[in-house]
Length: 236
Image 1 (cartoon, rainbow, N blue to C red):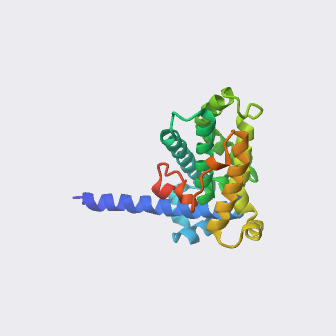
Image 2: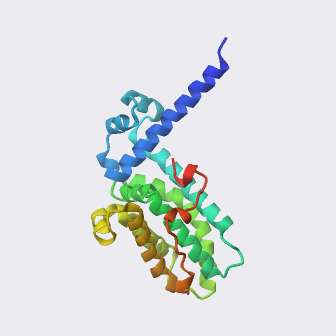
Image 3: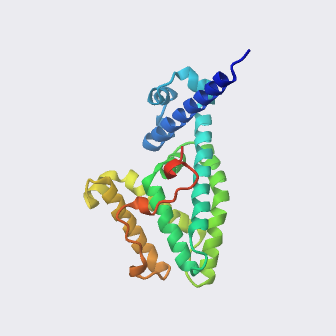
């Protein structure tokens, strides 16, 4: 007779192994780029055999696809929570501002989605296409908020692509330009990220008609981060 509890434990162990592999791969891809990471490096970082990675995922590309699926669920969770938690009675410009500054706080705390997107852009075209096809569905939620804001007379000269570009620049810069971030704001990572976030908030505020006194003044970015659907607000 098969021990059902043992079977369940084996399934849970297998799932935990897959999560460990995905976490290790996401960290490596975000740090070094997809092309510069080998399956052997992933196996060493995850503490599993090369063959076990092949067994669970088949190829490095399949690991990438699974991570992209996780990114999509993570961003989708962020956007859903932002919509639910932002006061619907606020004017559209103030509502969009709150959503943007909280989203930026979350992306700065966990930079892997931004870094993985940058990695895809510098690698195989199909990798970027797969990620873009997934995130395109999530953008529809943000687009509705942008359109209401434009109807109220703000950001009328901007479009979704430009807003996305602006946010990507700010979310990815601390990782891409780490030495310059340190030189500008000091070596304490939390304080540097907070100062970088404040720069983003100060630049976007006047475009949305937000007074300086209305800009949040957190002591730590975690006060603003969105929990989404993942543990501690982090994907994977």
